[in-house]
Amino acid sequence: MIIYFTRYLLEGNIGGGGRRALQIINEFKDEPFTYYSREQLEMGKLLSPYKTFAYKFEKHFSNGFAKRLRKSLLPYAILKSDYFKWKKEWRKPQLWFWRLAKSWEKKFHFVQDDTIFIEDPYYLRHFVAYLKKRKVKIVAMVQNLETLFKNYCKDKYRIRLLKKELYWMKRCDLVVTNSREEAFFLKNYDINVIFYQYYPPDFIEERLMRIRESRHQSPKENFLLMGNAGNVATKAGMIALINIWKKHITDEQLCVVGYNTECLEEYTDNERVILKGPLSDSQFDDALVKAKAVICYQVSGPGALTRIAEMLVANVPVMGNSHALRSYYNINGVIEFDSIEEFIKGIEYIKSAGAELDIHYPKPGPLVTKVKTRLDR
Image (cartoon, rainbow, N blue to C red; front, side, top):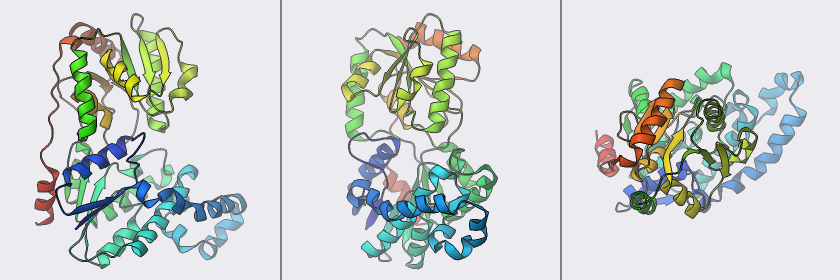
């Protein structure tokens, strides 16, 4: 039996992580397979007993006296989770993941013939250790190298935490990434790894194909800057791109859309840069039908952006800087820029040829075959 534990939401407003999880679920639907999502596991409730403790600890034990007493006062969970090596806003989730792993150990009985799919083996290292003792095969469906996020862990600990993350990935029988660059990196550390590109699950693909068809008859009005501004790296990139646009693009309109983009209001001017914020599905689809291109801009961040693949399926050209376009280089419909001059040239190219582009983003082969082949080695 294959059992997939995912920490992502699979209902409602599904983010990139949830979309990737649904792709994996769809790939294994014809196998002896089951999955437990965030909704099913009620993961949010698991944090509550530790949340209060974490707040109290930060309030009462954040002085020099605490440093001398940490080893004797802190529970094993905190010591083993590298609690203080992470930035403050990312400490509580460390406890959450530890508690989650413990709950799975209690709720489920695993046998040697099982194959367990998890995400983020570093966060769930207690669970990985538990499964290894039972000689259960572990496949890590890695969405990001978490320690590469600049805003998660303290700078002086990043290399140390990266080494730990690599260690726990290596303890898995197989790692599957959605980033070609991260697969290359892990392969050079002798980690058994597969790069498997993101492709939208069936119900999203159907919606994108309807957009694709509508774009053939629709006039193109503006450029879209799209992203979740709740992500620190994405927000920084969106602000940088807005500033570039206001300074260098005088004859085109940029519409800013996406989750949490209300925080960008001060950067827009309602003339050439318009904030539309979060959109309903129908509003978003209509915006894509009329878009000349979608722009992605990131100054940092690991993994690969799932939205780029979706835009290409919908026949929407994508412009982006090299970092944002990782894993999507040299694909028809993708325009890369790394300077103001290249950005302006890309805008002019889209204006002249964008409507005539016929973009084909291929669907990857079956993941089941790849996973079985690698696990049987």
